[in-house]
Length: 68
Image 1 (tube, rainbow, N blue to C red):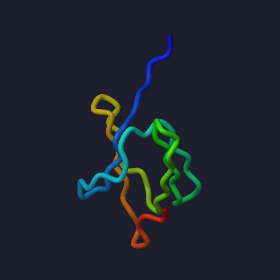
Image 2 (image 1 turned 180 degrees about the vertical axis):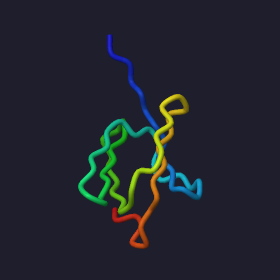
Image 3 (image 1 turned 135 degrees about the horizontal axis):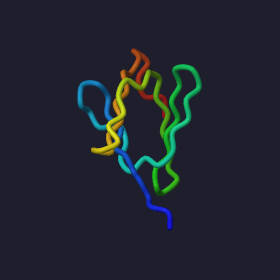
């Protein structure tokens, strides 16, 4: 049996970027995220922390910020 493990993604200031993220792909500094409803979001930055116990991911967002 598989368990779903969704995470919430925040920037380093604590601002929530996306809820219920189940998939992340990294292309250099472009980070693509997909949630449980298959909705996507892309941000320019760098992942700086993964807290798997609290289901939290922290991204240091570039000046360009959120792309889509």
